[in-house]
Image 1 (cartoon, rainbow, N blue to C red):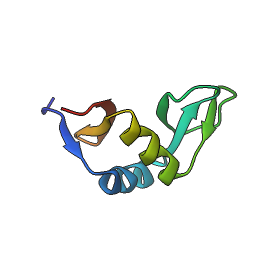
Image 2 (image 1 turned 30 degrees about the horizontal axis):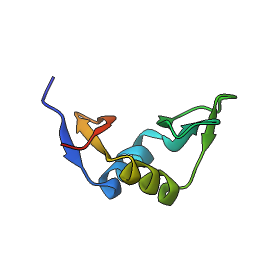
Image 3 (image 1 turned 180 degrees about the vertical axis):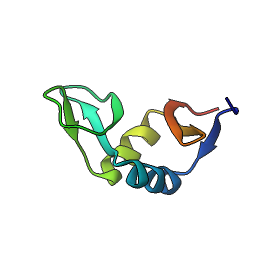
Image 4 (image 1 turned 135 degrees about the vertical axis):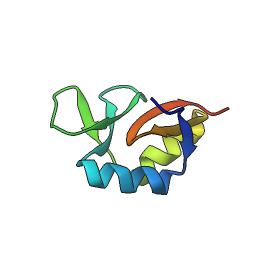
Length: 74
């Protein structure tokens, strides 16, 4: 698998749209996720809130071959 590389939130939006993913957080927490299907445990949020929360927690989106992960910014 190719190495993970940091991508912009705009690039993450594009990949998410292509894969049918939405920005979400675990209900009652600030834990962010990308979700595809509705869940009782996840709350879909706006991209603006997703980016604000991630930036405030020093998180960045990393990508490899279309697979995305939120991790602490290097």
